Image 1 (cartoon, each protein chain N blue to C red):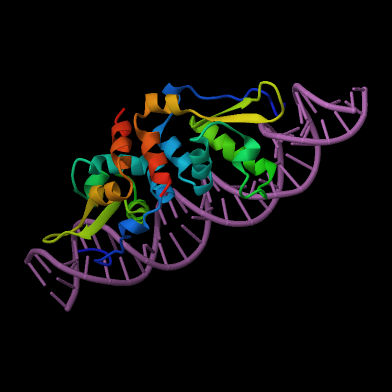
Image 2 (image 1 turned 45 degrees about the horizontal axis):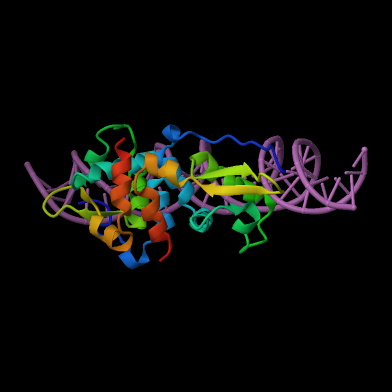
Length: 108
Length: 108
DNA sequence: CTCCTAGTTCCATAATTTTCGAACTAGACG
DNA sequence: CGTCTAGTTCGAAAATTATGGAACTAGGAG
């Protein structure tokens, strides 16, 4: 696998609305989240478009989303790479309707 | 009145989702917007709590919200100061449900 | 007209965020 | 074991954003 194998993820009760909004208030990160709405992806897939983004920048982008509670970033069970997942249910539990309206607005 | 009397405001079709989210992704600005949800206010009222914020900083905070399309900042018709208004309808037209879910989540 | 009030704009500085190379980590495969 | 792959972390530099004093603006009151 890669990296430290297990990264810290905040609990839903520790999510902050402004932190979530700030994480999504960036076009690149918003695009990634919109893609993840269609299902989990490996990190590489998230950057199929603009493939010239260096690894460290990718990691940082994901870190901001992960620390806000927007995504999970877990080791792939049987295989290389990492699996990124939208934390739909956790976000819905904490901020009802928020993610849905953002995703709907993001595809205009 | 004060300042340049008429400030530029973007049209709803020029709103950008990530710009709106970025504008709201700041605790101070989010608090201001939550207050404005209860009705228009003069700028002074927006800062009744933390009254030690200098004028230029207040103006800048308002500018970010205004340029994102979140608020209107207009001269008060008969009197001093400026009237700040949440652009509820314009935001709803462009990003349905977004503001409502943010406001609901902001009072937790 | 002058002064007062309320707010914007300008500008420079401070703080935060982004970017990306380089070093490091961990599993898979041979 | 060594190597390849995929990704994280570190650190420093670049870019963006925030802060706040000073100058400026506009209306209202005297």
